[in-house]
Amino acid sequence: MADIDALRGWLHESGHTVFLGGAGVSTASGIPDFRSAHGLYMQKKSGISYEEMLSIDYYRSHTAEFYDFMRNVMLYPDARPNPAHYALSKLEADGLLEVVITQNIDGLHQMAGSKNVIELHGNEDRYICTKCGKVYDMRYVMGCEGVPLCSCGGALKPDVVLYGETLNEGDLSRAARHASQADLMIVGGTSLVVYPVAGLVQYLRKGARLVILNRDPTPYDSRAGLIFREDLSEVLRELADL
Image 1 (cartoon, rainbow, N blue to C red):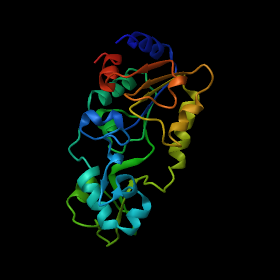
Image 2 (cartoon, rainbow, N blue to C red):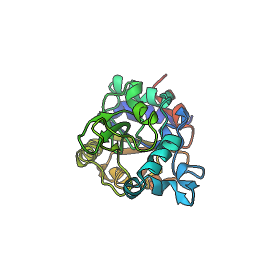
Image 3 (cartoon, one colour):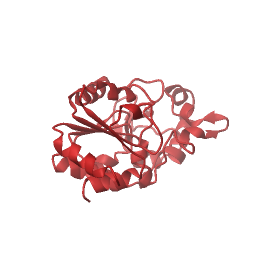
């Protein structure tokens, strides 16, 4: 891997390194991505796109169908971290990585041991009662049929950001602060086309380095000092000396 030594050098020179990740980080764990040629958003069910089915409007108007879709397509209760997750956890433990900012909702970074994780799109293992606020987990939802209900009778809503909803302002502000302080931002497994998350790259100050680990081109490739098209897990595993 020709540029891995250069990346390793940048990592050790950096006083504040940020990892910004997307669906490509979890594909090796058996969770499909979204926007590639064969991603989830290229598929439809009964003429409705998967993207539309993940909207707040669809949740409100077709709640039972929304949950059927979640159980059959979106939830992976048996997924486990892959080498990319463990590599990022090791880099944090070694004092070389400040924070993981993720668009993923699978919780695999924390499962792998990462401590400082900002989940911009929420977490699929949390479901909140719309009536009393009680929190349930994925296993409970997977064991239900139709709309999962709280013990108080209220319907549950996943603690994830659906299309048509805004990101948590606190989480987004924390992510922007880390990006603005970064000496090095490593972007992995994301197309960098979904805003406001993709806009975090624009917070990098002059002189900060950007590295992109992604199979396909992104709109920010011209800004990057290094680009890796190789398997993301392999790049991160080699970087972390796993």
